[in-house]
Each structure stands twice: as C-alpha cells, then as structure tokens.
Length: 157
Image (cartoon, rainbow, N blue to C red):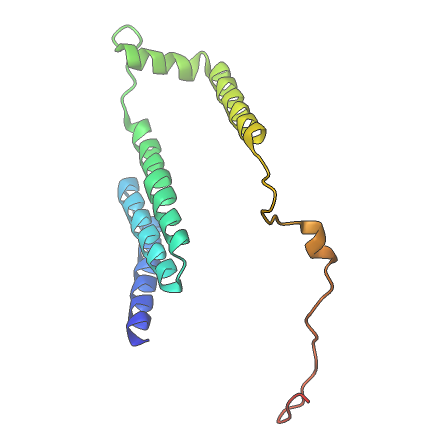
C-alpha cells in the first residue's frame, strides 16, 4: 500500500512538472520531449490503477505516433526552401505538391479517407451470439438506484 502511494506521488509530480515544462519551454524540441515524459508518467499512473491496456495504448499511440508527428511538424518549417531549378527530385515534388497542387493533394487524401472508412464498413460483420451495446435499451431501462434521506446517527432499516 505504501509503495503504491509513493509511486503515485512520484508519477504525479513528474507528470505535473513535465506538463509545466511543455508549455514553459522555449525550444519546441524540448517541449516535445517533456510531452513524451508526461505521457510515459501518465501511463505509469494507469498501470497503478490496473488499466494496463490504457497505459499501453497511451504509450503506443501518443508517444509512438503523435509525439513523432509533432516533432516532424516542428522540424519541417526549419528546412530550407530550395528553388525549383536547384532542388532534388524529392524537394521539387514536395514544392509542387504543397504549392501548385495543394487542393488536388488534399482531395486525394480525403478520397483515401472515405475509401478506408468504406472498406471498414463493408467488411464489418456482426456475429451471432456476441453481445452488443444498445443505447435505446440502456436509456429505456428503469432506474435501480433509490435515493433516501438518512438522518444523522441513524441507519437504514
């Protein structure tokens, strides 16, 4: 019991401290590193709660994807802009895609997103015998909690 409390206060303090450093750091790369530290310590708090799945999802999704993507976006504007005559093929293609053909590039991304959602919807199968959540049944269910006013010093009979 005391060890879990020590770890809770340790993870909480480091999470709060690194969260403050995320918004207080002048260097964006340092800010992202503090963000990763906050995510890892938040995952430690989830582990203490017994939510191992949420802890691993936090580490894999946020640390593995969002933080790396953020680092990429932060570092991308610092890249020098090269004129089209002196650029390599990759730089020239990027300059053309993000300037002249940006609307077509965004439309292609949207079409791919719709195609991905369509593929998921078409291949989704509902198996018989598997319980599903029905919101209408949950809303229509009668309340099972009875609220009673209890006098101080007396219990329920």
